[in-house]
Image: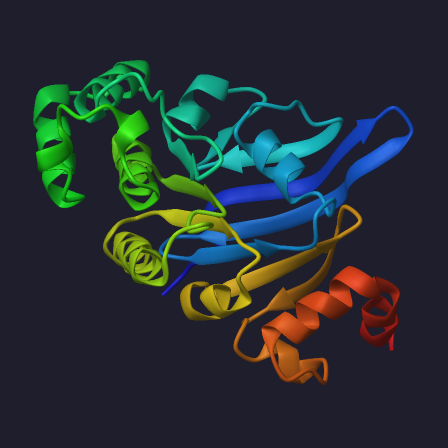
Length: 255
C-alpha cells in the first residue's frame, strides 16, 4: 500500500522553471508515496528531465517547493539529498575505476556508515562480487546498469530517481532490472520516480503515472486503466496522442 496523502516521500508543489521567456516546467505539483513506483512520462521536451534535475538539486527552480522525506530542499539541502539517489543509463560511473572503487568513492560522498560492510552486502545483492576488481568501462551494458543501481542503493535512499533505467538493455536483463526495482520498492520504505519511453515496461512496473506535456501535468492515473478512460487501447496509444495532440486530451479533461 502507498500513502501519498499523509506520508509522502516526495512532495512537489507548483514547481516552475523558466529559461528567459521559455517555460520548461509550468506549475507542476505531485506527491510520491512509500512503496510507490510513479512513472513520469511525456515526449522529449515535455519537462521530465528538468523536473528530475530540480528534484536532484542540479537545477534551482524559478519558483515552487520540493520536500524530500520531510526536508525542504531549498532550506535543508544536505539532509534532503542524503535521502536521495539516482541512476540512468546515460550517466555511467567512471569507467577507469573498478566496481569496488566506484562504490567506495560514492559511499564516501554519501557518508555511508560502516562502508566496507555495506559495499560487501551490495556487491552480493547485485551479483557483482566477481566484478569487484573489474573496471566499469569494460563491463557490458547490463553489468554497468547493475553497478549503477548498486551505487544508487548504497545510502539506502528514501527517494530513488530512475531515468530510462533499462534503455538499450536486452529484454532478459531489462526484465531482471525491473524485478529488482519492484522488490526494492516493496521491501523498503522508499518511493521510486521512474521515467521511460517503454510503455509496456511502465504498465508492468508503475503503480501510477503522470503525463507531462509542455511543462504541465496533463493526465494522472493507473497505467493499466488510464488508456480506456481516454478511449485508447494501450498506454502507448495514449502516449502518442499526448505527444502529438495534447490539446485534444486537455479538451476531453475539461469536458
